[in-house]
Image (cartoon, rainbow, N blue to C red; front, top):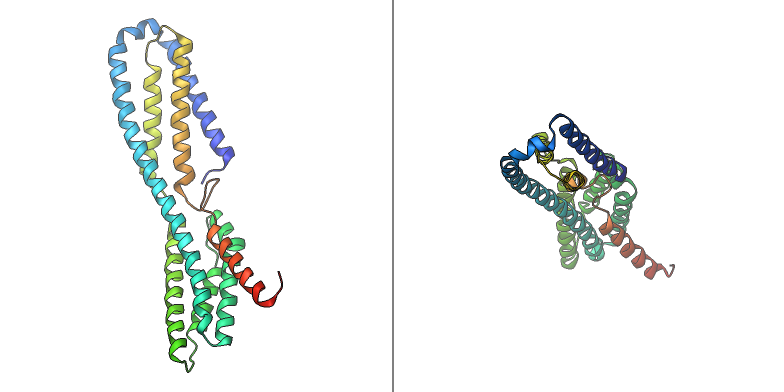
Length: 261
């Protein structure tokens, strides 16, 4: 849920902070005095690095899995909307046209209203109102033939699926990593970088480069977790691609039947 600028600031801040601590350690504890403790310091860095690598790897996998699940759910919702549009084909003309109009309005609302609202961390009521209208239209009482009843049953099924995927998407837009897990990630990164600064090296430039690369890698990993932690917010987010495709399908179908493109 971070912007690109925030990502850059986090990385630069982590590197600057690491260099400041490395310089401070060199001033108060010269490398010659630290060198005799390299055996202990090296073991500590190895254990901390391995432990933290496991932790952040698991967090990144969990965050990416949630992101992919949210993306797949949004695509499934859009697919059900297209199925709803086609399922209404066998209904009476007035009911069919109203459902198709509402399906088109729903796709438009997702692209122009609901996705921008989720990016701001709020939920738009527009989609909810359209879903309510779809249910009311589908539930209208008609004397239906056998084929029309089949079409209505399929319409109800797809409408139910849309409602379910919509509720899941709304929950996914509000979920995030708990604060305790962020504490573990941030404190773990700080401890790991600080431990690397304690190593007594004969080559200050090489040691500084190692500290910088470690800070760069850890800050990039934390920024990546933060970016995909909220799947509908930030620079990296689930896009309404499925609904854009649905709108193209609806527009093409309407153009084919009206002769206007």
